[in-house]
Length: 144
Image (cartoon, rainbow, N blue to C red; front, side, top):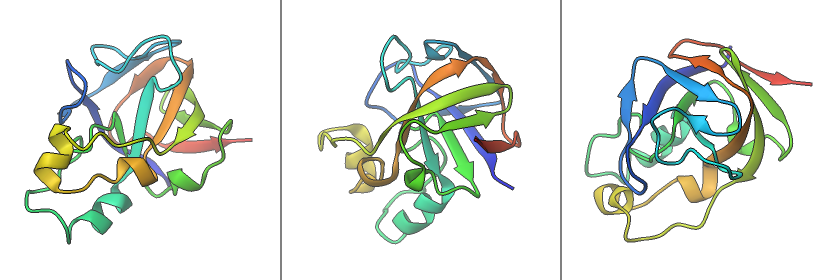
């Protein structure tokens, strides 16, 4: 079963996010109290814990959820293989996949700390279709 491993937020862009116990995802915005929220196509970012395992061999620092600046760290679902336009239910929220990967700005804190960033290859971005509370352990389900 796919699930949420961690929920992560930050007050500004380009920095490591801090793990929180739970968060409210707001429709048309993203995570409450997160710098990436707003009226655009990348309201929520997701990255699988499986991607962390690939990066461990390169990293010189401990890799903990949020270090790649993702809002939601997942387990048990190959996010980067889900087509754009597909919908996911995470806890009470529903997200629509809008982008897979992104251009990396090599001057960011993440790249400096880790030496590479997996988000440009395997990070997934979504807009919020329906808001709701999300927390670690919540199931993730692909909607048909």
